Image (cartoon, rainbow, N blue to C red):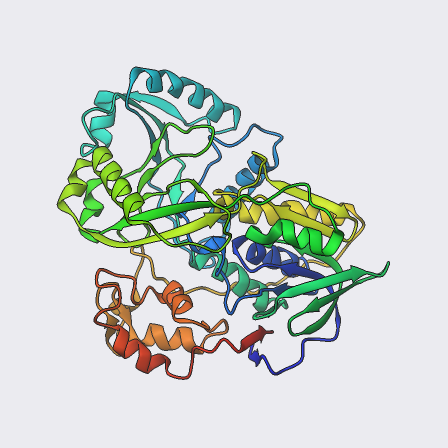
Length: 469
């Protein structure tokens, strides 16, 4: 599965499906269509996958307990995505921390609202959800502030790796015949009655079907290709604070607030990498790309985290970051076929990581219902991604790793070289961090950046463009 550089021409063959956008939904979509035997190309305007909305989220695998009701697109995709992730994660070497969640009530009014949340969870099929009183809460989470009066327990909520999952989906797609074009921005297209002619920054592409998974630019791609869009992306920034690994013993569960109409609120939760995460904020903005953090908002997050979990006051902050969610004016996902040959997967908000596999399965079913048939692969490849989570065995524990480069995150030279030589070699330092966690620890690359620069010299090139089997 070699890389083809940007000076190589794009494939001239007619693809069954071209998918626009290599975020988590696009990667899951490419996987589903490739496994079903479709000749699939994933198109990404950036130098690497996950350069848009998918690079910043809370990494929770949601059960759908608080999703819109059964019958909604979001609920169905969440249920199916949750189930499929649990079914396949071990085969792809993806981690899963089954820690459960608690929705905390801080007043009598919020405690009353827990019953409505419990009923909603049961309606959504999460029948394990139950209300526990303050005493039971203390036994479960002794470090939670004493002012919490009750909680709704959801045992099935879990934590995963937000970057390895889409990486694994795309890697499996490529190993089973799909193609990836990076640094390849869509500029226009038309359907001639038989196939699409897509104009890109690197030339023309031909496809029988187009699936729009463009995330923050989904409405604009709609306008570009079909001249209309039933939704408008309204970017919503979420800022996060990552506390040091020393804070991890303070909690066992995901701690959630009672949600509002606008947001699920500020979460305090463990990460798969051994930290504690606090966030996100919910800030409406016009920009689809401005993911800068704000000192005042971050201070407020730190304060809120310490109100929920007072012991956080004894621990420092490792990192901060922000993500932009592709919210729209609608509360539900906007998955729609605008024509028999064009589908838009839009308005996939904060639950997209959990629902991605379910979204892909839904769209493929609808694709089949429109008369499209392929022969599913009988013996598909199941590549295993490197284990970089704290929940499993790490490379530093395996002999012959050539020593540690990043001591904060215990990343070895062998891991760095394997990522650089791998089938989806990173095109930027940020992408290398997502593949290995090098430079993401307490010192934020202060001690390892010099060696990382030496190891990556001449290797991180935005010219990397097309990956093929």
